[in-house]
Length: 255
Image (tube, rainbow, N blue to C red; front, side, top):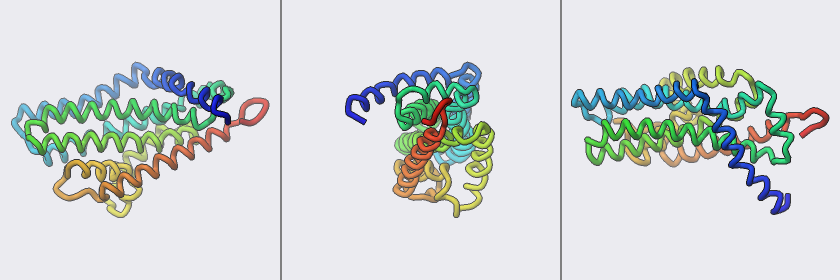
């Protein structure tokens, strides 16, 4: 591919991102996610009114139980599987693939849009909750808020990277994604320490420890290991999604 054609291909990336934003921000979906994202903030207000300011207690009862277990995975699975989901279900993906745009550009744009929305929603949720409940705790509260924001960013990128290719392999990606987050990430990753290397939840918690130790015990993965495994997952998922998209056949020929 020449420099001119490469530049032309990359130039369509913002347009695909914009279209994907519009597809993902359906009124019902957005309202549901906004209500979920508001839940940690509401709980933080309740904690604050009760005069309870304890970083580890708040982390265990709100961040772990609500933000990490409900808000983050649900936002990621809805945005991640929705990036290609509607187009594969309706068949409109063929019109997108008919354009002379490299498949990796399409994957990058779709994944970027889903990741940006997931990061924005989850980070805003834990940041506002942290401002209400954790900042009054002083330096530890500020560091804990930074750690929770870091966990949301790493978790969002990894979950979206996983769910985008999943939606290209099956039309039941949403159901499978929710089942995965509930069983593997929500239950087994807490009960079985041996699967930490295969748990996005543990990647996020390990990354958080780079800023502040949110729990009384260190995370199961060191920050370096967590960041490394998260990067490997994102790169591998991107390659898999690109490969899968190249397997779609257009009417009258192959892509």
